[in-house]
Length: 185
Image (cartoon, rainbow, N blue to C red; front, side):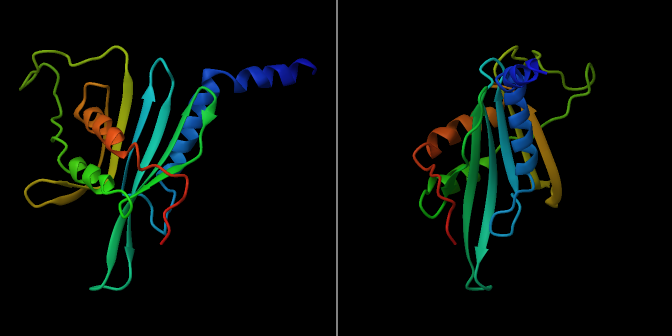
């Protein structure tokens, strides 16, 4: 029984504990409401070797009654590493115009082409990166086709993917925007 506290300390300091923190934060973030609304999209990133990670969720907030209604966007970010999660940080489009710019750029992400291996249009290379940072982008309100059908979307890619490139540019643009204060209504 004396070894049990030592075992617990070792487990909490292990990379497995950090991965569990990421997994818990990522799972909860998809349904976490802000101003009574769940996020409409999000992006998670995990460094393969560094085991640094972040969970980013995107919100839209409508205030007032239509047609005088106002709207703003907020991004919630929780980051962590082998030691676990840090506090949530926020970026608000009312205080940081980069939020709106980032979300508009998100709408310009290229269309994904599913690949039937060894059939049809083949890529000249595998496009694989053996190490790097994995990015998982999801959207509950994506659009598809000529009639703009509402679909849900999830894309996962490494550092060479369009989603990763978009997020690298976005993270740089948002760097000065983050604050621990939740956006006020």
